[in-house]
Length: 259
Ligand SMILES: Nc1ncnc2c1ncn2[C@@H]1O[C@H](COP(=O)(O)OP(=O)(O)O)[C@@H](O)[C@H]1O
Ligand SMILES: CC(=O)N[C@@H](CCC(=O)OP(=O)(O)O)C(=O)O
Picture 1 (cartoon, rainbow, N blue to C red):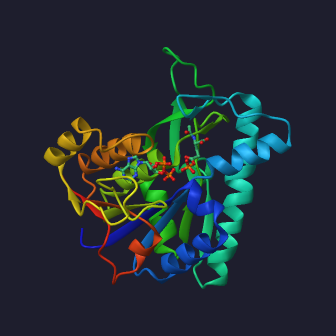
Picture 2: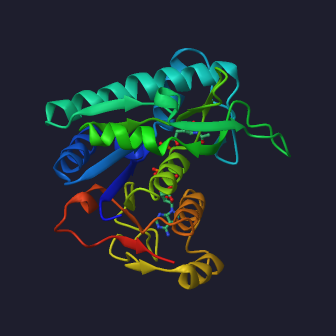
């Protein structure tokens, strides 16, 4: 298994900022070798939903996806956001192909069981069609995934984009030496959230525990780091967290995570 694969996830704040998005996509275009992009778009879904009179309903910062919000998610993630990214990448010479988890049966999921909270049409991932995705890569396509999965019986689900990136990385690790990049608006995991110069260069399972205990990792970084270690425990070679400049091979100022 000599071949390498890079999976890059871009978050909501990168998507909202046109200049950051186009810089990110041009750096992604220049990356060598097999690559896959995963994008979120939660903020855009909230904005478009508001315009349609479909208000986002959040509990503890997480979206509750009723039938109308699922329609908004499908329109915004698989349509507006995905196609704009695909078109920009095509203009930069990358043969991008837009994907949801239903396309090519790429990501299978089931509806999250109701416990304390009913998240609605949110999917928990069961598996990835790694051979199908491998065939797309071999044919010269660069898959661009939005945050949707399906159950194979006609039902689409909203699935967090960080989770999609981690599950794709895990699924593809049987075929490639896979590195997962989480791009967001900060330079990396910061020791002090206000100080962009406080990037923690390397985190492993031990230092992760102490960062958690010290409350250094909070808010959206909590599930992101959980996804990172879940990926590393399932054969993903390396995970990197940083801003878009991390995709430039000459930059090394970001956070690298290993077991
Ligand atoms: N130690 C930390 N270093 C960097 N960011 C942190 C840290 N702790 C909490 N965060 C917060 O985590 C957020 C990233 O999570 P999230 O908003 O879910 O990312 P994304 O934009 O990829 O969806 C950052 O915007 C930041 O406010
Ligand atoms: C179930 C769930 O959390 N779905 C996310 C999918 C979009 C996403 O992950 O977008 P960001 O990466 O921009 O946050 C949501 O609807 O907000």
